[in-house]
Length: 357
Image 1 (cartoon, helix red, strand yellow):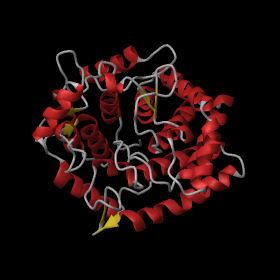
Image 2: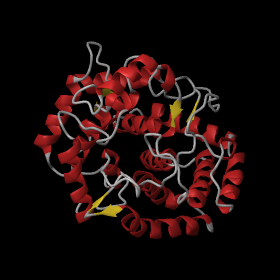
Image 3: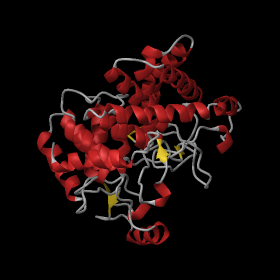
Image 4: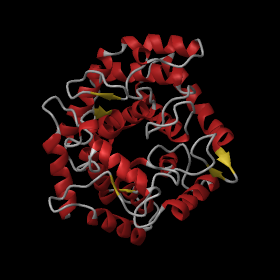
C-alpha cells in the first residue's frame, strides 16, 4: 500500500462518526454534512481495501436516514404527477447532518444523482458481503420507487447547479443504481425499474448528443468532466461507444492540464483543477489499460497533498476566473481540505485495474 493510499484510508476512518456518517469535509463548515454521493464513493473505496465494517456502517446510517424521511416520497411523486417543481418539504434531501437530520440552511436540496449512486454502492457492498438484511431491502424498494417516479424531472446536477435542467451525469447514476439493485426488486417495482432502464440509454443520446459527443446538459453545449460517469462506473455507455469515446477525447482536450477541471465556464473558487476528477480520469485510464497515463495523473494527485497527507477539493491552478477565486476565499475561506471524496477517488483509482470496477 503506497503512502498516500494508506493515509487516505486512515483519514476516511478517522472522520467517520460512531453512527457511520462521513462529513464531506470535516474542517470546512459548509461541507460538514453527509452527502449520499460523496459518502457512497467513500464507502465504496473502503470496501475495496477490505474495510467492510466501516463501509457497512455508512450504508446502514444512510438507510435509516432515508427511511426516517421516506414520508416525502409520496409527496414527491404527487408533485411529479402534477408536473410542478418540488419544494424542500416534498423531496428527499441531497445532504444530512451527522445525526441524520435535514440541514436547515438555504441549500439546493433536490438532486437525484446521490440516490442512484447510493443504490449502486449498496449493491456492490451487498455483493461483497454475500447477504441481504431487511433494512437494506426496505431502503432499496423506497429509493427505487422514488427514482422511477422522478427520473425525468429537472433537478440540480452533481455540482448543485442548473436545477431547471435534466443532466446526463444524473441519468447515468440513476441507470447504474437501478440496474445494480434489480436482483432485489419484487414485482411490480422490478417492472418499473426495467422500464426506466430500457428508455434511458436511447433518451440520453436523443437529449444530450451534440456534434458527435455528449454535452453538459441540453441547454449547454460544452462538456463536463462528470460525463466520465456515463462509462465508469455507471455503464450507461460502453467504453467503446463512439459518442462516449469522442466525449472523453473532448474532456481531455478542453479540461485537462496538470489536473482535470469540471467545465470551462466553472467559476467556483476560480474554476481550478479538481483532485477527485483527476483521480476519476486515472480510474478510467486504468480500466482501459492506459497505465502510463493513469500513473501520471495519480502522481499529480499525490503532489497536491499537504505535509499531513490531506488532499483538497481542487487546486487554484490554471484558473478560469482568478477574481472568483478571491471572492470564494473571502466568502468561505480556503479551499476545503481534507475533502474525503478526493481521498476516496485516489483509493479507487489506485486499486482498480483492467479487471473491473
